[in-house]
Image (tube, rainbow, N blue to C red; front, side):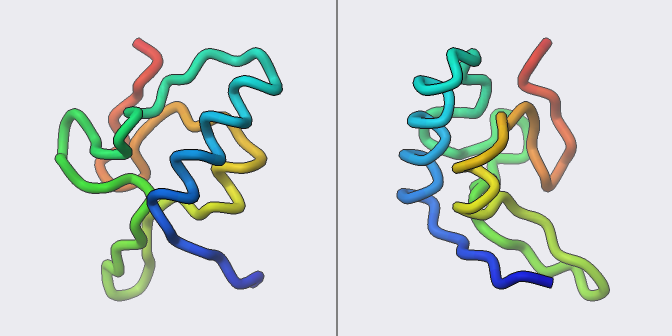
Length: 76
């Protein structure tokens, strides 16, 4: 698996830039804090056998539509 970078400030900027360039709506919380679980969506959280979080690389290349930690959708 590729190395992933977890940095909230960089990922927030990357997602904003992605949405501006693609014309997609910006669904993710602008500060990165999930409305439901209050975790930073751009931080990696280790759950033992797996981890959750949105990397800078993912925020740069994909539209973020929900929380990776609690699975709350930001589209509805």
